[in-house]
Structure formats: C-alpha cells, structure tokens
Image 1 (cartoon, rainbow, N blue to C red):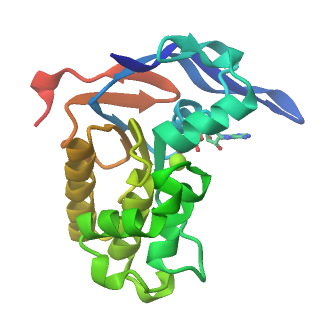
Image 2 (cartoon, rainbow, N blue to C red):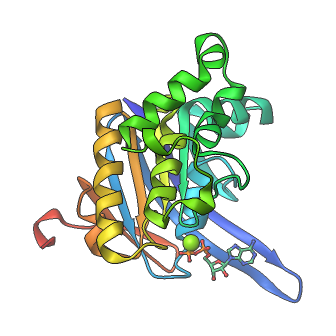
Length: 232
Ligand SMILES: Nc1ncnc2c1ncn2[C@@H]1O[C@H](COP(=O)(O)OP(=O)(O)O)[C@@H](O)[C@H]1O
Ligand SMILES: [Mg+2]
C-alpha cells in the first residue's frame, strides 16, 4: 500500500538577485508500507530538501505529492501537522535532542501531542522504547552526558515512540565515527523493521545505504533508481 507518492515534483526557491534556483527536478518516488529506501547524494545535491518535502515541511513548487493516495496540497496545515506527528518520525544528523531534558523526557515529548493511553502512559511507553535501543539505564541522563551514538539512539527512540508508518532519516550517521555509525544504522534498520515502519535513509555514505532494499541516487536534484545488480 502506498504511503507517499511523488509525481514529477520540483522544488524551486526564489533568490533575491538572480534567477530562481531549482533544487529538485522531476522527482518520481513511491514509498509503500514496509519499504526500506536509501537515497545517496553528495552535499548540495538536494537530499535534505527531498526529505523536507517527504516530511511535509516543504511543499513541491510543481508536481504532486500524495499521502495514502490523497493530494497533500489539499490538506490544511493542521492535517499536515497531525500526519507529521502521528505517522512520520524524523531523525537528523545533529540528533536535535532538547537540551536540559533527560533522555526519557526527550523520547516522551512526541507523546505530549498524542491522545488516550499514548498520552497518559507516556513515561512507561518512552521507557519501553528506550529499552529497545538499549538505553533504559540512561533514562535520566541529559543529552550532554551521552555519547554521539547514544544521543542518536535516543533520537531513534523518539522517532519511533508514536508508532509512525514512515521514518525519515537525514544523514543519521553523518556526525558519528564510522563504526558507531554502522552500529546505529543497523539498530535503526532493525527497530524500523520490527515496528513495521517504512524507512527512507538519506546519506552520502554508500555503505550506510546498503541496508536498504531499494536504492536511489540524487545528482543535482535529479533522482534515479540504482540497478540492484550493480550494487556491491
Ligand atoms: N531555502 C533555500 N534558499 C536557497 N538555496 C537553498 C535553499 N535550500 C537549499 N538550497 C540550496 O539547494 C542545494 C541543495 O540543498 P540541500 O537539499 O540542503 O542539499 P543536501 O542536503 O544534499 O546537502 C544547495 O546548494 C543549497 O545551498
Ligand atoms: Mg543535507
């Protein structure tokens, strides 16, 4: 079943003193339930812009984006916020944890916007997810007391805590050393699979991309599928 579909999406930004800049052009992409997709591109190729479009943080300049078959352009900003909170999980290169809040509070934050059991039992749920990423014993640690790899594991727990259908990871290992990065990516892949969430990982590192099942390259804002048989 289709979660998100991009049809001929472009993203252009106006620049004050020159012609508009085309960051994404002619993007066709389908993300279905349970998919594991990687997009590899160099710095400046449009990776974060693509992820922001998929995450409904930026809208396409032209072309169409569908969420579960419905055009996102017809959604109100409130509907988009709800989808973003409930169905999407975000992971960033710089972890983006709230400073001055414990690991548990960070993981529980998305549940403040949830309803029912998810709201009332948020600490218990957050602790369960922290346990899944191997950090139950660090629940009361502050971000600055955690290593980079541990902070990213907290961020993974936070992205998963509402049971999203799709996780969007923007250079999730970009701020980690190679070995830690590979461990964190393996964990992300495992917990996403276990929870049934689709995972789109954007990276400049082909090794990190290898865990995915479907591979794309982004070059100068143009997305192309990578032939599986040429993957090493
Ligand atoms: N709002 C913006 N205004 C002007 N240029 C932008 C804007 N957003 C992105 N860009 C430019 O578009 C290109 C792609 O950006 P980005 O999506 O962040 O690439 P990546 O994540 O692959 O490094 C870069 O050259 C960047 O400078
Ligand atoms: Mg980027």
